[in-house]
Figure 1 (cartoon, rainbow, N blue to C red):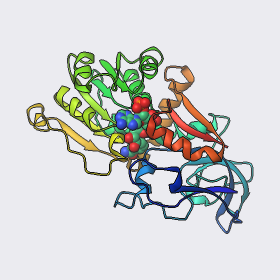
Figure 2 (figure 1 turned 135 degrees about the vertical axis):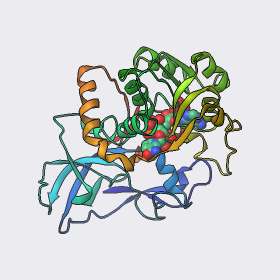
Figure 3 (figure 1 turned 90 degrees about the horizontal axis):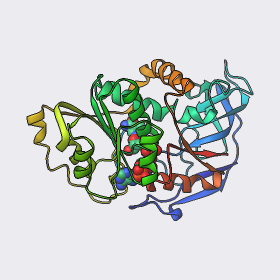
Figure 4 (figure 1 turned 30 degrees about the vertical axis):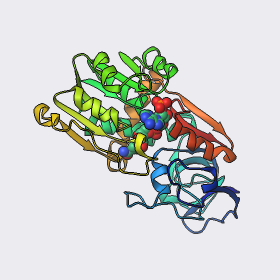
Length: 330
Ligand code: NDP
């Protein structure tokens, strides 16, 4: 059983020396526990936050111990009611090959209903983030014009498509390469998209959304957020989901310089955490599941193979190596 430990708290961009892949014992499951052989592991931007010890909404990873993360796998042994060997579960014992977990923290998933990896992405945490952030936090309504950053990523690609399927008047996305920009328009049906690395975001956004935006779904922060405030319409809403452009920063970044525009536009900015919105899960799975089956909502995954590449996969998410959800397959 190999597992990834955090050895030191990264400063700036995490370096391989901050981590180690180590051999560990597989613990026999106790009462109420199950032993799982992980099949797919999730690597997510929020994990960067847990590598630092700044106060946050989740406890930091402990140094010298295995890190955690979303995972799906097959139950090998079970001492828990309702879960049997051969069942598949979604749980939080990622960054390792085998996990002994409390069955209360594990959810049974059906490999016949969807590919197992989907429970980490399009039908899992990142999908619900898109759904809840757009529909609840940003109070999306039919006819809204929607801008989403990180639009070729797991959350962003779903935000844009849900907005389109729910009757947005215009869907605009930004991403970090021309290939990703083409995918947004050609495959996901965005009305306009731009490569944020090419020209200032504010200028590109004004060109892509000449009539302004009613909703901005922020995955990036920084100049994207400032540009969105600049293009916000009357009564516009900004859902702050993530700010990946600042996660590796070592100093506090200046906020948007144009916040005063919110007065004029009566605009609203609101942050949210997916963990507060699991009551929407059944509705989300029913609605998005149907769109996937009908082909109206498309998704991609970037799959990296092998536990030894788990760290590289995580670092790749911060660099933008992924299109859609980054998944590690064991
Ligand atoms: P993604 O699949 O979107 O992967 C991250 C992407 O961010 C990369 O592919 C890269 O794409 C982009 N990126 C990296 N650096 C920058 C930068 N400096 N400027 C602009 N884009 C950058 O990840 P997720 O879909 O899992 O997460 C998206 C966002 O949602 C993150 O900010 C994450 O923290 C947040 N999140 C928040 C949750 C919540 O509960 N609030 C829950 C889940 C996620 P590119 O090539 O386009 O640069």
